[in-house]
Length: 379
Ligand SMILES: Cc1ncc(COP(=O)(O)O)c(C=O)c1O
Image (cartoon, rainbow, N blue to C red):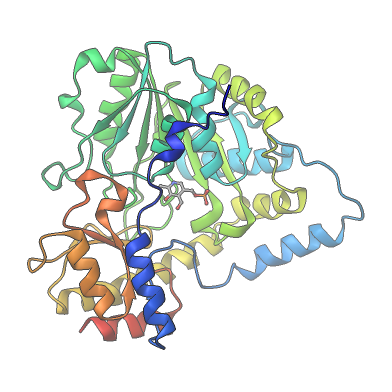
């Protein structure tokens, strides 16, 4: 019998390739390009986190396998944080798991369920990992249209009941990547009511939740329900993208215990010295407040420049991405080309799904001088 590879691997990958090769040609021709496609902060990781990391690393004289679900001190810091910020009471041992960044946790989550005759719901514009997971695992999924008219949130009333009856998992993301849409408390309430009525889990990916302008975005942590799984990441709010640390939280003890079992043989444990730095980061609010202010200032500057350039921004008050369109360009690709003509590489909205036209996503976790330069190039 011939070797058969997973046919989902034949699907085209994250398709910014054509634009990227034009950008590479520009760099080769000596044009300084600003890459505004990747949400990987360019400002330093807060010094106290670096210190916590070094202190723990230096105190380690021999290498040991990490505790894959998270050291008790880390789990306690996560549950303390949830209590402090959302008055959410979680038992560190029964309701919290550490993960090696939320990407792997989101990807592997469907493995915990049986999908015979069941399906997953994914918004039509999404972090691509959700769709990759269900494709690779051969799980049936349904795309929920995201449109400007609905504030780029799935229209819950429009989901056919026969689909809801078979739904096992709903990947939900607010503040949303790429559109920056923020679900209200009322919306989350309706979503969790639906989850209870039809018996499915809402996986609420809340990785931008702590970087906002004025109002704390609503969170499933504010709800006393066993139907949510919340993922939180230290990547953005603590500038720890490279250190890989996140949290999985749920009031559903059975789910956490199954996840613990599932994740045990997967090799996803974060090195112990990073877990120590992560515990420090969850326990500290000051550095998050400082980063929130940093992005508020960057956001203000960028908003003004985009306005001057006659570009329209949807939302844009959370995280460090902007969802932008122009009256002049009818497609994401054309608008991306316009940005590239200014030597700025952005992501066409269509990379995130079929409803991405005519938007582009611009990421601004850049150093201030680069952001100033980007703003100058726009005008
Ligand atoms: C919506 C969303 N969720 C989760 C992640 C994964 O973040 P991390 O693995 O760094 O925690 C990202 C990364 O950019 C993202 O955009």
